[in-house]
Length: 415
Image (cartoon, rainbow, N blue to C red; front, top):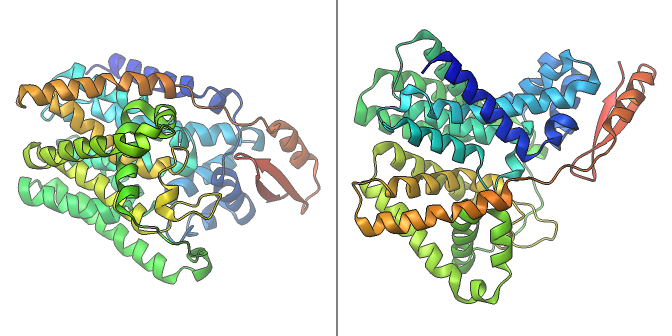
């Protein structure tokens, strides 16, 4: 692939991401932990000391690094820089898919380009779009792609691979899920490079384990809410959030979820069809697809087993997880695995009836992409006014700045 084509792909990828929510660039504002934690800690405590602070009980280095980098620019430009960092991480999986390192697994370039487009246009993904707080989900997919890709002898690629793996290892709990899959790939393919990647993930497991054990209990404790485990709730989560969410998007699923037909009958055949498709791919698909499906199962199972979702109303966890507006990030990797399965089912080695059904399912993705293309813009909280207020404040003054989502704020001590 020529450098001109690489640059064109990068430009198109950025254009797609920005077009889905233009305010991330043209009216940049902090979002949630982007301001309250990553930037505020780096500003108040210092960029270097903040890098080693755990959050929610584990290390979140990729977000901490973003907050530290934002200290280089004037405060007025910090939200834009934060968003640009998130955009870069978001488009990296798409650019890696289009590279020649996936030519063995996906020989046709147009198929790789199509998959890259689907990744950038993915429905049911507003929560993880172009914000620093949720970059770890895109980083997790990027790290999986590094593990799945054909190893490259090029030094630049090797540095890239190790950098991604080491960043993932100290950015959330994903190394716990990816390490055993990397070990399986090494055992079956006997690629020495997989051992190096596994070593990096193992270091992350050790560091994250120590951090979880030694972190203040206050960062880990939550008001207990019952999980509310029930087969019907689990079936609706799979059918609605994962299978329909990946095809018709959040808005499409939100419309269907209110219907009597969905709640009385429709969710069950959709869940069965989706589960059967994944099971078929687990037995017949290529190793890389099977590992991706298991990766998604690990992530969803963890979200189901712990108090990951916090609804406004104290609903049981599984009951809240059925809502189309809650917890999109926890379904992202399972949705990627499901959609990848659908694309693979269209390939010629599969039975004709399966290919036809998969083609019809993939066609419905046009609905999801169309309905979910434009993400709602953030509320305009007049961030420039507060930036001017901080600049005019005396040293040592406490400045409280409202940020999105509404009700959140960040606190800075002027220095």
